[in-house]
Image 1 (cartoon, rainbow, N blue to C red):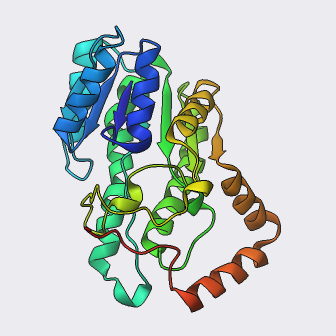
Image 2: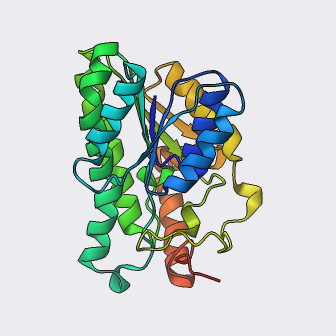
Length: 268
């Protein structure tokens, strides 16, 4: 299995839980040191040490190299988790076209690069493509238009390619989490992690990374078309489908008060 964005958050926990059951893993992310530390930790459980690949999903060729190293080591690829992503935050007037391009390059084109690189091997094993999206792909928030747009695009992508790839025996699972404990809210608009920055989202509403990863793996194993993670996420999606005026009212009030549901991450 190949996991992008495996150096922290959901990607790291997916790798850990898969490692505990003996999965043969390839971990890909920009921070090689963090990947190596995770690989060493997994190896202490008795599982074969994962392959570590320094990889930037915005660079052409990096994903093809990651897939080649994975197949070279393990001989096959049964699943790919397109997990790498971050969020660009800010009101429309404060953002630029470059902010939107930067967001789409990682969150949309990074996922496309991942799938295109992995698909030939996934087709051979009739395996799984797991796309980590967000509830923001259902419900757009003021002050987060680049992020919401990117996640709406991923939901459209999954809806389009799921029936296409099913013809080749490939299962596509779209994961749409709400707030989960992770570092995504500690990453600024340039994609830089500020590990000591505080999380602006109250802890009581966040699902633990362990529980979220477990639900993701269960959904992928069952070949589910989509799994919405967290109860508040399920509620927001239900409101969007059946009572959309409620979400519009909340968004209008949010825009009038603070302009966004959270500020951009900054160094302390």
